[in-house]
Figure 1 (cartoon, rainbow, N blue to C red):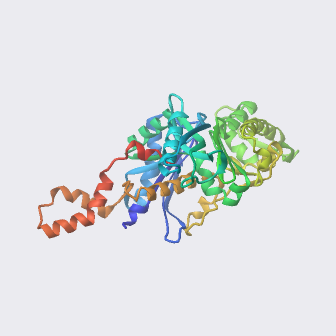
Figure 2: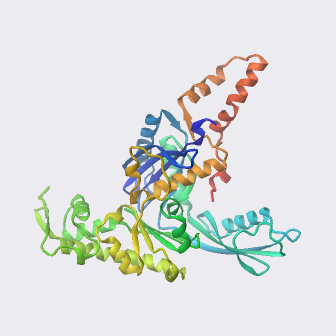
Figure 3: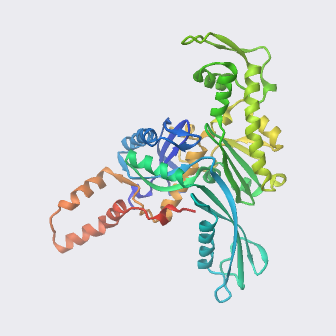
Length: 443
């Protein structure tokens, strides 16, 4: 198989950073990251694209670097979405069986019913996650296909989001010169890269502290039970510091990262941050203690929202693996202790749990803030493989030459013509074909 067919390209459009990555799986099932780039984000607020042209500029800058590095043309890109209008909705349905046996067709019809009817006007159902199947009243069935019975009941969690999120994302990619291959909800994919199977089985929460949003996902018995996002992140903490200390935004972000503590009890009593004079703003001193008090107050508000979401599942007291924190905000000193204090659970900082082929830039990818882009890449590779690598995501320089030469090639003898068709036919179909609506709905 042509190696470009195995590649998947992903864009993670965050509030502060846009990250682009191309990767594939090696024959021994290791993740091979071929190229990676990150640039400052534009046109995004609270995880949502709000300025199409500015976002397109950032996307084009991030992705074109990968194309130059790999000498390829990226045609279609998988992307993740964030935003406060992302939630998990329960849906139950049932079917009579066919000839007394549960078939794959019945399960597919149940999934499609959940995807269609669990959403409200203006929403899209992205991921349908089985929670429980019951056959003739026998509950707790994980895989009912092939079982005998007259009736099957299903309970699903459907992760939904505002349809405007995808529309703005698609337009931004189009303006940057790329097509949208598929969409994943960030809170849905993060656990694939940063949580082990044992953790998901025992019960675990992943909290992703981003710049514009805070993502929450909860797993129990290896099933995703909750995925949602809160419309608060590191940016609101910086705003609080700017307003509370009367300093400019750049200095607020700087002192937050360099001098702030999430737990004010950990902040030293006698240390101060020196803010220089700039543009008429006088120089001033801010005590670490006061600064950390501002940070803790906002983080407690965010974590109260997280707790509210977790308690709605009724599973908090059954989580054996505690909390894993990711995102740029997880670097805040003492945040693990504050999260543990608020949730009552043990906390660790996240890192990838997947096997990776060694590359020079892998150290950068093994950090908490890469949970989104790494989870997206794994999901994109899986979706590409399930499509039999026919999505036409990436085109090499040699394939572009073939494509451009094909329309002007003179008719050849039958034998030669047949050989050319057999060699390049599938590649040409994949590169020229557009995704149908069904292709965009990836579970």
